[in-house]
Image (cartoon, rainbow, N blue to C red):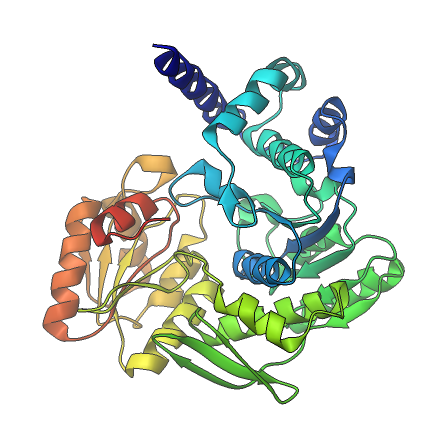
Length: 422
């Protein structure tokens, strides 16, 4: 009976946390700073590495963390969004935060959360920082949620910042063009703190370098990977005549790995090649061109902007020398017309699906955009579970790979279907 009561109390606290989503997104750092103050400013108890950008943030953070763990550091990672369980967002040395720890934080700070009117992301950011401090980590690897300048994570004073490739995404919040979005992402650059820059468009690199110089922040350009080779098993490449391999698939992942190696080299120059490679060997980042079926070959990728979709398609066509069958779902806040253009003519067949869940468009709603901009063949299937079956059948019949893409929010259904556990 006691266990049942405890379980009920934990569920109540977790439900309270999830309902904070109703407060939406608030731009600004005042709420986060105030809640941190009430929690004892835990973010000041350890070193941090801060990563912003559009694509590749999560993969880069995962690789940096794996290498640091291999080097003997105790590492906290804060990332978003999650795929199946909220707990995935907060972990220490690969161990997710427990439900009991989440509930304990909510119970202790519920009055403060309500008084400050902290949003879901503001609250979970502070929860992560508190969890890291209580467990005496050595270093935190922090991924921005949205943007940079006004993102809740931008309360930290990192020892290194890094910015992955920037492209158009979340234009309704971050701005209408690449210049504006770059300025928002650059907000994580701190005075006199080194910034590691990934390969960027010319306008972005110009803005980032100008801002870095104005803050007297050392600019470090990521190492450039050479001789990139990709297969179903992963990706290999060279940096300065050193050979590296990673389990993640795609040219873009070689660049993410090179960015990670550059970050590591400037965080702790004593970490050697052998340790870096051992860390990279252990990298997992689900739903990033993740192979979830062998026959027929089916992949799941959460790419939801044109650059991400381009990278995904480049990798698949490079391996299989043919166009795949696609299954797309999208949230209503995405740049749908741009995504339609990015997918046009790139698939043997495209299945359009969705649901009312988590703001996803229904298949028939999403298909309206394809009707306006795309004359290639597609199939509308409102039932996502039926769409998964259709993808497997069509991929097998045509003898080509299949790819599910566009959203984090179908991950549970995908993994339930194909048997992969987070």
